Length: 608
Image (cartoon, rainbow, N blue to C red; front, side):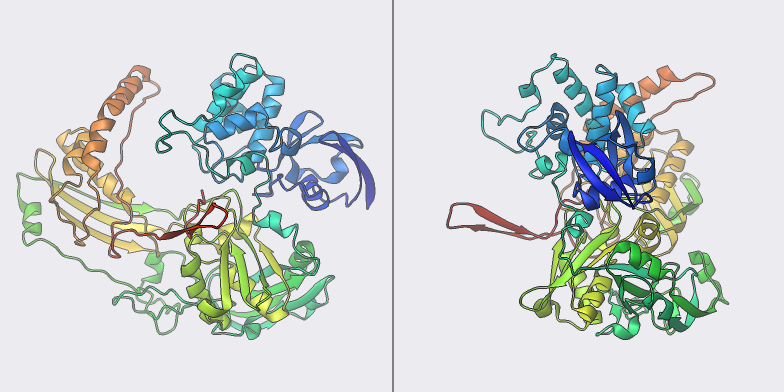
């Protein structure tokens, strides 16, 4: 340990620090400045940005031994507060640049560093600055961020007034269609929005911090799990395995179609008999700090009998492949749909155009900036309360309760934290059941945070597809028939192959890609293969509005093309979730309170 003085947001702070700790760890853990977010933890996402002695710096990769004595550190708290916003923060709110909000403090700090150095940047210089300093955002598409910096710079130069970047209620009082800020914007631009890892900094002193011991092979029988060395490590309270799970130790899939050949109970909470995929959790270390827990997790050893590893759906479908889940075929779901009496005849008609191809789309991680995190405890009524990034609280409660030996309606409460983006991965439970096991086994509050490697290997992904698509169309471009064959490594994303086949059809008949899609989009009176009609038929109107924008983009691309660099404009059409489970639905409730305020209850929150 060593002493070090830092001038943090203008205030001297005398600290005793571990020289190997990061500046981010010290700011968050010792000074409680949780606006400094840790996303990737490797200096690649910029969420931890601070200004260190006048330079924008990624605090997660700066060791305290490299921080000079009396160094000046500025975080977003030193730029503006809820009661006194900086123009950058006001512009961020005005342009809707704070969406999930996890990256927001880092961006605002980085923008402040830019405008200190260059008070009149052009848009390209703003983008180049964020690129140079590794500031990443998964929500906005960056245009609102650049807009906010440009407006803030104009205010700081006196070319605009503050009121120009503040929301004003329209004269008619109508909110719909206005630029009203999202209710969470103020908290997000000031760093006071509390995400899961921030809350963990303020949990009770007896909180246990968890780390999972994971499989580093993709398929194996478990012959034994040795936790003895891990239990001797500093700060360790207990090391849990499947033997400590009080319930069924399985997470149910809940939704099973008649064609599903499994029973839906294939996913363990803590693996007991087999490793099914790389990263499976075999043990949970409960310790007095995350650092101690992670160190101890490295000491858990496994006796494994390796089995063939199938790294793709075609490999798992091969005739000699062993069943991954004994008793359930590897091809556990088959869907055969055939519609239309004359479908095949369209492919044989010489007057029609036939387009056919095979496609592969790779596995895609959702890459939220905030890695998965949660905490749990027993409340005063003895109920298990789990806080996480879940975007399906009732769904996840029902999925994990039997495995924990609980009745979701009586014994459990699920709470959604402020979520730093999920983009779909948190529609599946991840660490919620692990937290539940630890709390029920120890009786103490527990916190679990994945690092970014674990975010990659333990959470759901958009799955690979192997697809063959064949279209038949007449010479006008009207699609007459389609045949498809899909092999899917359990995933929902199918638009790519259909769009590619559309493109191939359009090229064969030399038809504009936008007009081809406009001709074939959903219209009133159309039927679908599943019988599920759209609730609204918005696509024809959307194409009419898009057409002039698309033509302008084509003209711009053509004007900018050279012999060396060809430019173009693309178009794609997606219809998401038009499947077998009926129309999308949602419920909410509102309650008028005695003091005249209104409480609104909802279970589908903004998650990036």
